[in-house]
Length: 143
Image 1: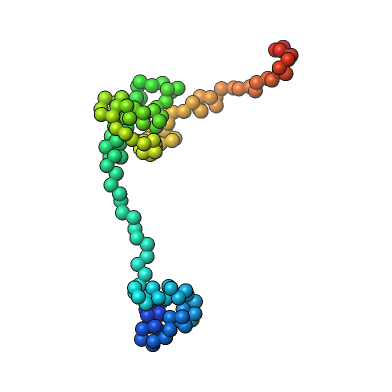
Image 2: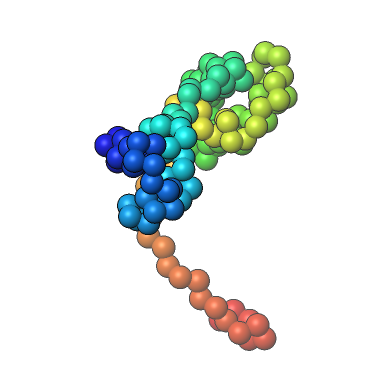
């Protein structure tokens, strides 16, 4: 703020040329000209919170689908965001079909069910012993 005041004083009160003030202050002439014309810099505008009516409408339905699927699916039949999207688009949850994108469903799904809490087969698979497959040349058969 003090810098702007100094620049405005030199240009407006002392009647010094903008080019000379810019050179002296080590700034671009357009920056000095902007300070002289507009006063103090306004800075960046803060983004306001956007309204998301579709998200508000769909979020409760996604939660209901996730809660209702807990007893209906096994570990291998995991509920995915893609499956939830198709259920919402087709109206399989017993309500009116709604055209919703995958990204929105994925964001809601991740908030409801964080990645660490999702059941995955990784823990089951990691406890099993595995051995590499043995490759045989194609003409020799197995043996």
